[in-house]
Length: 437
View: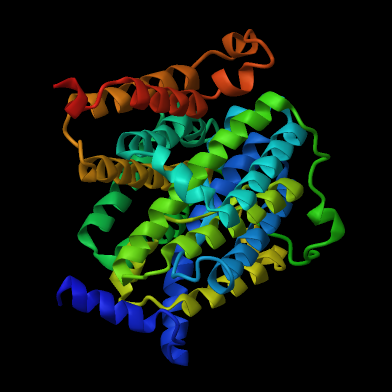
C-alpha cells in the first residue's frame, strides 16, 4: 500500500465508530499501552513526595481520573485525533527538580503554566512558539528528559530491601528485565511489541517475588472507599516566582511535544485543518495542567507513541479511545483494583521507566536525523552542550544546590530547565551552515 493509499484508508476511519467487537479490541490495545506509563510516572512522583501507601493510592486515583477526563476531552473537543493521553514526562522532571520548594509551590506553578498553555491555544501562539523548537532544540528536550530522570531511576533500581544487595542484585535484575523488554519490542512488531511494557511489569513482578528478591507484599484490602472529597484534596497552593518561571519553561516544552505528535498524526492522515486542531489541543492540555495543579498531580500530554499505534493497528478511529478514557475513570473509582498496582516492586517499575526513556532517546535521535542539518557540527554542539549541562545539574550534590540563591535554585538547580535554556541560546548564537560559509 502506498503512502497515499494508507493516508486515505486512515482518513476514512478517523470519525467512524468501529463495530462493537473491533471497538473492544482496539480499546484494549490502547489501554495496554496507556496503563504502564500512568502507573510508573505516577508512582515515581508519589515516592518523591514521600507519600505513604494510602497517599500513593489517592494520588494514583486522582491521576487516573484526570488522564481519563482529559483523554475524553481531547477526543471530543480537542485535537479530535487518535492520540493517547498520559502524564507528561516534561512536567515530571519539573516536579522532581523542584521537590525542595514544596508541593504548594510546585503545583501552584504547574497551575500557572497550564493557564498559560490554555491561553496560547486559542490565540494561535502555540504554533508560533513551536518554531523555537528546531530539530536540535527538540532533540535536546527529549534527551534532557531521560538525563534528568537518571537519579530517580537509580533510586528505583537499587532496592535496599532486595536480597544480595551488596552485589546490586536488584540493579542486575532491573537491567536484565529492561533488556528482555527491549529485545521483545524489537522482535515483535506493532501492538505486540508495545504491549511488552505491560507484560514486563506483570511477569517481572512475579519473577521478582518468586526469586526471593524482596518480601512478598500484602494483598490490597478487600474493602475501601472510592474517590471522596478527601481524595480530591490537593495541596494548598502557593506561588513562588522562580518556580513559576521554571514551570512556564517546562510548559513551553510540553507544547512543543504536543505539536510534534499532532504533526505526525496530521501528516499520516493528510488533514487540512491541523492549525485549528493544534490550538484546541493545546487549550485542552493547558486546562488539564491547570486541573493537575489544583489536584496535586501531573499534567497531561498526547503521547508520541500514538502514530506508531495507529500504524500498527491500522486503526485511526478517535472513538476507540473513548472506552480507554472510561476505563481510566472507572479505575480511579476502584481503590481495590488500584491497590493491586502497588504490588509492582520498585526495580520492576524502574526497568519499565528505563525502557520508556530509551524510547524517548530514540525519538530524539530520529528528530535530529530528520532535521535539515542532521549531521552538521552546529546541531551536535547544541545537543551535546545542553546534555552535559543538564547532566551536571542533575547530579549536583544537594548541598551545592541548596547553596544557590533561592531565586535561582528552581531554574539553575533544575537540569532539564538549565539544559533547555542553553540549547535555545546556542541555537540562536551559533552560526548556521549557510551563514558560516
